[in-house]
Length: 392
Image 1 (cartoon, one colour):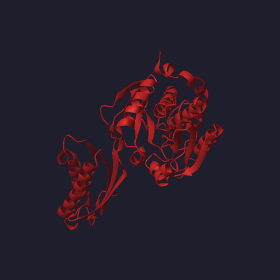
Image 2 (cartoon, rainbow, N blue to C red; image 1 turned 30 degrees about the vertical axis):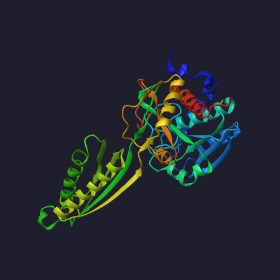
Image 3 (tube, helix red, strand yellow; image 1 turned 60 degrees about the vertical axis):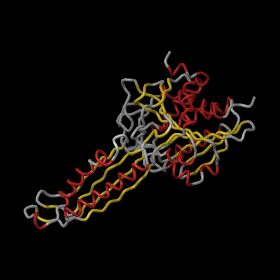
Image 4 (cartoon, helix red, strand yellow; image 1 turned 120 degrees about the horizontal axis):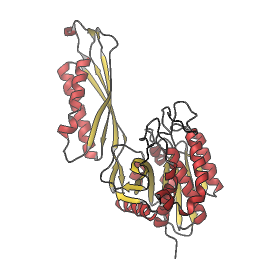
């Protein structure tokens, strides 16, 4: 029996409505901090279930609170709502109706699964305590989780732990993974401006050549991880853009370089930034140019608490999922990290791949696998029932 059928159990009757909701959200994607339609749908659905609903947290965030029994313990469950600024290239009937906006990361599925869990928990009530359902805006590079935390999320809605999941096309449907400690990387961005004097390409002796300096800098940047970081540690530095010049016979006065750094340990992060700035200073001195460095640490590493990672895997196994410890973290980043800095918790990869039509995340033809919907609903529900067992 397929995993999706084996674990659907008592959520089977919810699936038609959940699929319809997911397709509607997919057809109407919204960008970071502009998820007004999505947030409105979420808030209305939570109110219909009888939850206490709070809107406008961290921008367009929505929180629903469900209480049962007398326990003072509380668990938060989080889903992200925003889409990507990219055009969809698919032939599904519910393809994006918003030009240049696409649910290419599956947040439509995440939102739907968490709403499904709210419906399931509201009717079964096999728990004792408080469940806080957190629907977060702006995960895609805009730090919506940070905005909600700074807006007093955990002061207004105290919780003992927080959990989230992300669909994972690299894992087959029916599998789930997480691990204690780092699960996703810290994400840094660097923007470097190399300034020379510019001049005629036939008279380079009269210029400080910004292109030559930038080329030397790119080469040296790509040695930092290999030669400055312990081989036992994990890090990636990638130059992703270099831009300068407009003519074949003019040496430009300015060249811009952009890139990203991914790492898991703050000390490694410090060493890479220090080395990058030092390399830039050395190239500037050698090339008689001026080099400006803007280095931004925009997402910290996503670090699971040991106890909550174990709970996440135990809940997955209880749902019939093939649960295992992830052998290594991923170099992609996730702003759920800000919530894990504020509260203990865990982030789970929920497999949705293994089909011929599967696409990677952020692909223009990506579509969330609806067969994963019951798996996510059951996992969220199982986490709550394990963390908040009913009184005996």
